[in-house]
Image 1 (cartoon, rainbow, N blue to C red):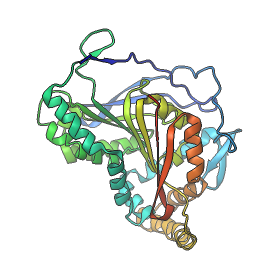
Image 2 (cartoon, rainbow, N blue to C red):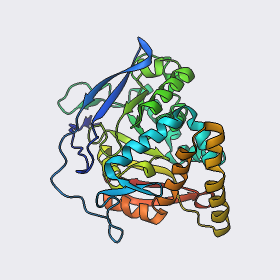
Image 3 (cartoon, helix red, strand yellow):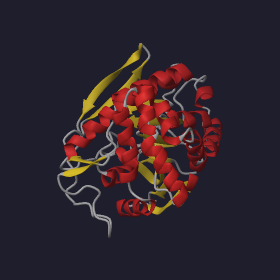
Image 4 (tube, rainbow, N blue to C red):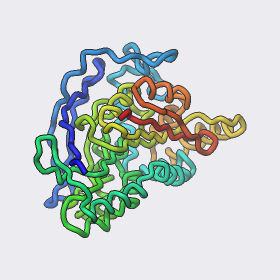
Length: 354
């Protein structure tokens, strides 16, 4: 059997001309300090010279100097900071927030996302291959590439680790951490908000111990912007984003960068609040969203405004069909969606061509 060649990787990410805060910061966990993470700052390369095409019939997600922050119109540069502030406010109570937003159903939806990804059966196959030492993996220059993951998963906007932990558990990462050497399966959590990452890493160390992060590198936490991710081209087999895409300033740009970091044949999956398809359910859902959720946020978290924004952001986000159109325009193949709970949420998925 011929050896697998790891393609040479290069950085090509660029930021939207109207965004000026896409500097990326890598968080690397260290065995000597479990309370803080060391950081190094890197700047992305200039944007490509070609102009991305707008999706047909719907136009660019961002056009002109303003965009929406909930129902409010704000400058493009202002939105990112205001969204960041929202999640700084809710970081320590993020699971409570999700329970409010979904009446507890977010746990079921995330479990269903895990099932749809197929991570568990893929992980079993990868583990078996690794145990049999099946095939030799080499880098393009002929050197050893033993540290390359056989299955690389990226969870964007997943700072607290709720989705990533499901992947780690399905792949039996904690059990694998009892052995020496780098894990063949890696899960990387990327989030723009350091407070969310702080909560996520703290939860991970409490749940799994430190070996998973420090020894086998099966789980990593990295600060970065979904619009210009701090990763090389063709780095991941699976890209997921749960309840995060609607908070990105330029969704089209995030979709293009998702395609960039996926390997050929890689899969994109987005779990997001969407638009209810059943009229009676839509009326009930609107009543709960606008009259109950902000009040709960005020009473339980002393933060009505953040929860009001989150409710409004759902109504301003793409319809199911519009997001499919934007995915296709970004370059994804076989783009489609699956509604859950009458369209309260939807899972969109697409593939990078081989």
